[in-house]
Structure formats: structure tokens, C-alpha cells
Length: 200
Image (cartoon, helix red, strand yellow):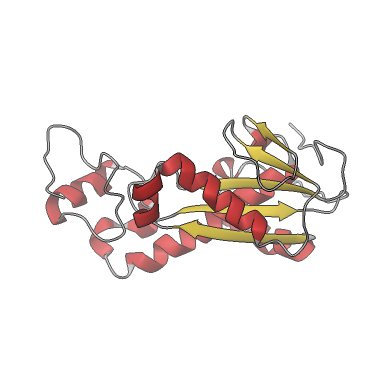
């Protein structure tokens, strides 16, 4: 399905999306992107449907051609304090705030958002596979978060974050059971299945 260029038909429409919401470790990362109305790229799609290679090809193209873009991380201590939904929305707000141009309209992937200042917005379920700016934001959020996880993997290689990116894979959970948790783990998440007990 071809992505649509705009929801509101306004020139400065910002798309925003997050990555890492379901992870056991690492930040939730959001990106915000305003693209030119005539932006087109046949590779672009929801980042979850793209290979790592395609995302890495798209990242510099998006950054070069965007009117403005930004990304932010919200780290586990904050996630544990305010919960993952609020942390995801905060990450999107922070990313929008860092844009060099104020958007006229915001389109958000998903169905949950809180008003940002007085800018009108629309939440769109599966928006990252429907609108170019949300798809672009999903690619940036995913690539910046993946790079962060690959970086902290060097500190704690036993969890293999360079591969699983902090998601609850069997391997990741087995490493938690074996080695315990790190400062990068989200303590309010169910880190292990119920048959295991973890002292936090």
C-alpha cells in the first residue's frame, strides 16, 4: 500500500512514533519528522516491516531531505517512575519540542497521545504503514534506539542486546535469570516468567 504524504494537508505536518515500548531493557525512543510535501521514497514503510539494511539506507535519506527531525530517549529509571505509556508520550513530546520548526499539525502512530501545547493532532492506528512522516519517524526511532542498544551491549555482552535489542526473547530472559539485572533493565516490567523469582 502506498504511503500518504499528509493527513491534514498542512505544509508543516509532523509525524511521530516510538520504538522499544515492549522491551525489558534500554530506553523508549521517539522521533519526530516533518517531511516536504513532495517527499517520496519507494523503500519507506513501517520500520518493523523493513530489514536492518533498508532502515540504514533510509536513515540518512530521511535526515537529509526532512524539513526538520529529532529523536529522544527516555531511560528506564523514568519509565519505572511514570510507566511506559507516559514515557512513550513524553519521548514524543520531547522529540517534537526539539524540532527546529514548529509543526502546524501532529500525526501520531497508535491511539494514545496527550496534547502538545496548542498544536492540533490526530492519533492513527498503524499510522507507520499509512503516512510517510510517521513511517520516517518509526525508522529514525528504531535506528537510534538500536544503535544505543548495540553500544550498551559492549558493557554487558552476556545479554546479547546487539541482537535482541532488549526485547523479551528467550535468550534475554535466560540471561536475566542467570546474571540478574543491570541499571539498564526496567524494574517495573515482568522480567521473568512467573515460575522464576527475581530479587530486585
